[in-house]
Image 1 (cartoon, rainbow, N blue to C red):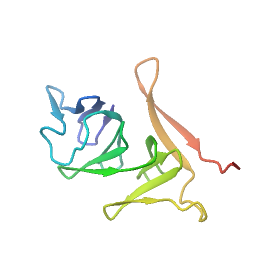
Image 2 (image 1 turned 135 degrees about the vertical axis):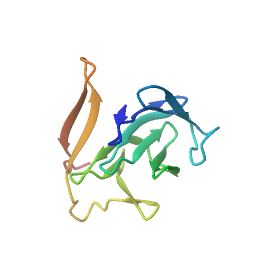
Image 3 (image 1 turned 45 degrees about the horizontal axis):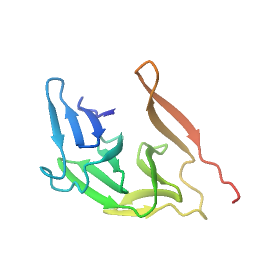
Image 4 (image 1 turned 90 degrees about the horizontal axis):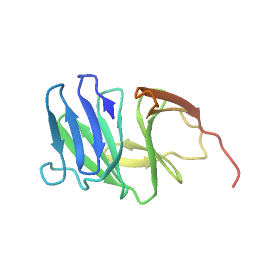
Length: 142
């Protein structure tokens, strides 16, 4: 679950994305929404600009920005969608990190220094509150 700056609560479900306005839910799925490829969402994230980023079980990343959905397929195993130090969405996979740039997913180059090695992820705690966890990405030898 995540909240956008305009106050909407968004939930990822195995039957689409749900947006709650405080009174009613609106469901977005592949049957009623252009740009959604798969209904089985497993994670959701709101970036600093209020765009919604959701990932599916089959490796699709769906972005809702300016009233429209667009989906991007990744062949690698998705882990999470997190934030870089500037609040931009970063897609974490088993094999690396990706940004969306000019409508394409671009892999972060491992040879050059990353803009940020600190990421924030949100998880619901035992008390039901949304907790933000900071962690660093460290280079390790395989």
